[in-house]
Length: 409
Ligand SMILES: Cc1ncc(COP(=O)(O)O)c(C=O)c1O
Image 1 (cartoon, protein in one colour):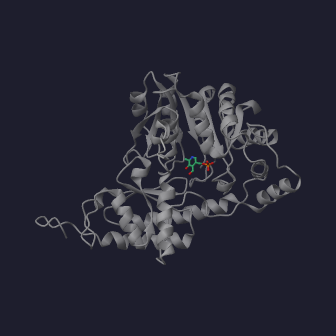
Image 2 (cartoon, rainbow, N blue to C red; image 1 turned 90 degrees about the vertical axis):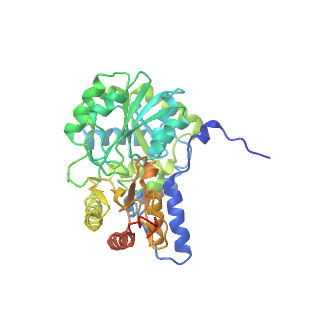
Image 3 (cartoon, rainbow, N blue to C red; image 1 turned 180 degrees about the vertical axis):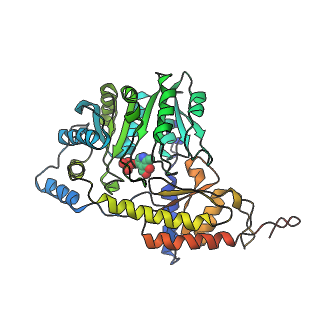
């Protein structure tokens, strides 16, 4: 019996992270020494007080369906968090809880996009952005943001891309995979453009808001342009800040009509998020961020280690990340070189495959819409990152220029 797949599902693909990680695990299973720099989740454990709150919820019988947009106490805690940490005012009906930030984003597009509607996505980007758009009938307008512009969207690029069918702009700061952090001036300039196009909404993915290396508090375009709040969806969660990726809790904050429509989508797709995870997330938002500086310091130390090592590798150009936990590196200078076995490195995927053979797993920039680049995760033990730098350098040093006659080394 042949299975006929929907057009919709054929427009999207499996997460590239999962595939890269699986390859690294296979090699490890064969006994190979592979340093895994593919992971997109903190290597830290969920803080103990959060786990205790989940356990207490289970024991108290808090194990039933919850209201679709989330339990009241958690939504209220998100409202309080947004005021305390972000200086943004929202009301309870404007906040929805979902199974991770990913589902918040999916719900938003399912609730607002019609066939052919456009969403502006600066690239490099987290692959879910364009795929969530495609799955819901929209067309991602991918705008390439080069190394020279720090992988950040320029106001003139935004203005040139906006058309009558543009529904959303996605802004992700600090960004995955680039680690790029928009400055106040850059955010204000983008807001200035958006003000001229009132039909365009903005989806702000601020999941990495607390992981930034300048010591400054989170900053959103909404702090600089409060007038945009009436057409903004702020997406946040507990996955990265509280090392809670597996608990699957994210939130969206936006105008009530949008929150309501997203709730309708979620009510038919998943219902409310796990009651136990919501209890844990409540403890997270209410328990303070005392554990965080040590974690950010660790990410910073790893970033410095890897940036220093890779900056010295001929052919690699490092974009020094300002936040998040990835180091994104341009590798155009290594294309066209040959491996010792005679294979030519034509793409970033070829280079990632070579690095994997040499014992470092990374993800090719093509997965994030920008080539030729590589993404290295620093959300792994400092010792692993420290070993990875020299190993990457050694692997790159083995690549040779081609012989003009033979086309081979
Ligand atoms: C930019 C960005 N947004 C959202 C997510 C997903 O967050 P969650 O685990 O809360 O669904 C990720 C995860 O990698 C991400 O990098």
